[in-house]
Image 1: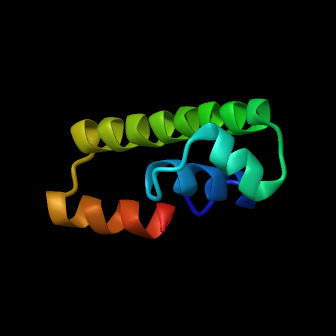
Image 2 (image 1 turned 180 degrees about the vertical axis):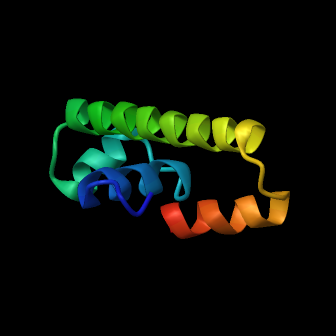
Length: 77
């Protein structure tokens, strides 16, 4: 999440954590509803890619689980 552009991360957090609707986010940030929708789609895509990396590392990495978790945390913050 820290690597996402600030506006995308803000939109994602308002939607996921605060439970705001697309309309509410658009109004609060002064952007179009379409921008909110597009940014949420891009955020979800980025998160899917990160999860895929985690899965691939978990299944192919010779490190112990705790070492792998520490490594992933250091990479993705």
